[in-house]
Length: 543
Ligand SMILES: *[C@@H]1O[C@H](CO)[C@@H](O)[C@H](O)[C@H]1NC(C)=O
Ligand SMILES: *[C@@H]1O[C@H](CO)[C@@H](O)[C@H](O)[C@H]1NC(C)=O
Ligand SMILES: *[C@@H]1O[C@H](CO)[C@@H](O)[C@H](O)[C@H]1NC(C)=O
Ligand SMILES: *[C@@H]1O[C@H](CO)[C@@H](O)[C@H](O)[C@H]1NC(C)=O
Ligand SMILES: *[C@@H]1O[C@H](CO)[C@@H](O)[C@H](O)[C@H]1NC(C)=O
Ligand SMILES: *[C@@H]1O[C@H](CO)[C@@H](O)[C@H](O)[C@H]1NC(C)=O
Ligand SMILES: *[C@@H]1O[C@H](CO)[C@@H](O)[C@H](O)[C@H]1NC(C)=O
Ligand SMILES: *[C@@H]1O[C@H](CO)[C@@H](O)[C@H](O)[C@H]1NC(C)=O
Ligand SMILES: [Ca+2]
Image (cartoon, rainbow, N blue to C red; front, side):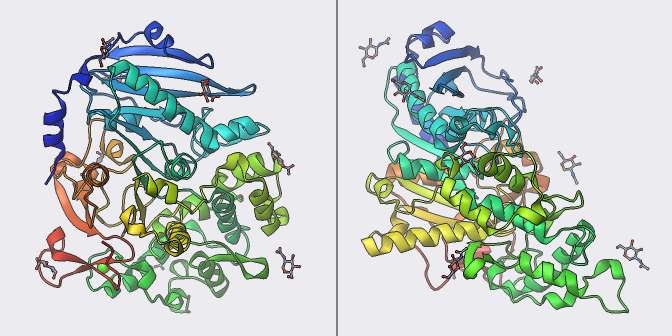
């Protein structure tokens, strides 16, 4: 099996690792077109740190390899500009990789860039044209050009200019270009392959926020289901763990193994009435009949006027993250919903949500499609034809972006490409991750770690790849590289759970993730914490 260590051993001797010029602002300045300027270029020694905090990625990068850190500003219109960062390592693997953002956040993702530069990549990331935290979209109010930067422009332009700078710096060609990102980062990756299929050879996207004009209103609608706070239908946050425990109790065994993990939430036959209060129950641990009506909405697609499907809701098992959108004790829905409608659609600062929000706002959002952010061009054939490969994954306990939206995307691609005669699994595979929450982390020790976008840095600044198991079977980025560079498609990808999500504490468990629609099932014998005890099963086992 082709592994990262053999790869790095070969590449370490490649002459392209000799830099053509010094790591100084003036040296980079000479390379740039008139719309771009250097913010800084700083050499970082081996083992050094780099801290250029922004509201989206405040963390310090420590334990870096020797590299040149560069930041560039690009004027994108008369009213907007964006920045992007590059980490150019002294020992380069001849490859280039871009990282993504989250929510409405703005800031170069120096953290994922560290995870990537530790593996020898030249790494790039953009601030998408503004600085803000992930839940803050006030920057977008009456700034259509900045919205376009966020929608797709800053990413594409940064990727293209970053490639030119990288090739000049090493006086050599980039052999392969990759992308890895989750959430908004997932959307950015899909947007790239739809609009600019030449930008990347391989793309790894997690939990993509691809359908902005429906996802954001759904985030708002879900909060409204649980408002007002004094209505009999309101479910207080204190009941979320009670609901989660009942779902686990019923759904865990239905997959064939009682292990506190729901392997197949869509296959679970759930009986919510088990949660109804009766006179002999402790009344703070059960649901009233009006609350049951609200719970029912959480588990069903949002359909509206004329039975129109608007967005899928939560899968069973996402209760641990209900607080993000359903914890409405403040009296208003989450900013993930309201901020988009206020700043991108209605261009205002206040709305009486319960009185004024309805399906017509979704239709208005569809017609505006701010910044063309929706990554909803399902004809991925230009990317397929140029040899591009796409690995897509989504946690089955994601309480921020419903897993069903990834399944829906996948089905739309199938519906578009099968009639064209394209065999979709030749270039695109979807993996659902039982128990994984939004992008990273999991409930009840479910194995979730595959070195996807944001995952390595979540385990620590100097973590890269899958420590102890860094091969194409366990590391989704290496699986993608093996597919792109050697034509070997991924089958199952083994997810890892480190004890307490701490690499140095060792591995708790591993379990295969299967290409959709197949699913991992316990063999019935063997240690369930070991991947060998599981087999991908399904009517269609995709190869
Ligand atoms: C860049 O590489 C070419 C050969 O590919 C060589 O002729 C040239 O001198 C190199 N330039 C620098 C600045 O190293
Ligand atoms: C970043 O981490 C390094 C190494 O621990 C430390 O020396 C430096 O002060 C930190 N920088 C900031 C801004 O926290
Ligand atoms: C900046 O200028 C270059 C060279 O003219 C052009 O290719 C690029 O599209 C411009 N970028 C933006 C964001 O306008
Ligand atoms: C809000 O502003 C955008 C441009 O920034 C515009 O396309 C949209 O139509 C405006 N919304 C309304 C309700 O006027
Ligand atoms: C009912 O449940 C609540 C919350 O779990 C707990 O605080 C309370 O003590 C319980 N009351 C009784 C009578 O058991
Ligand atoms: C619902 O259907 C009716 C009858 O076809 C149509 O007139 C109306 O515009 C539809 N409403 C929406 C919101 O699409
Ligand atoms: C898990 O890791 C966190 C962060 O490193 C630490 O604070 C906590 O004590 C650890 N818990 C256990 C049970 O080891
Ligand atoms: C589990 O089942 C698969 C397929 O039948 C088999 O290849 C594998 O060896 C089994 N593992 C164990 C530990 O029995
Ligand atoms: Ca189970």
